[in-house]
Image (tube, rainbow, N blue to C red; front, top):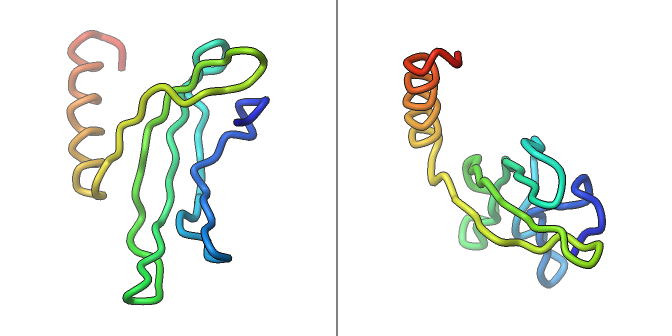
Length: 98
């Protein structure tokens, strides 16, 4: 596991193929508990191409100077991401936070 929050990634290779290609990440919180949202694509071996953009929110806990994965939520599509954005925008506006 990574020693710094900046080193955390969802990129993954297997047999010389980058199965999960990380496109971007945003660190939401740092510290003993860190939260990162990643944008990535998965390799589709049947099509020999990467699929559509996907998104995941990951929580890590730092223990013994290493970040360990503790929780994740995968956003399955751009449509689901837009719905999440809409409802969070609505809720924060209602609470006077946005």
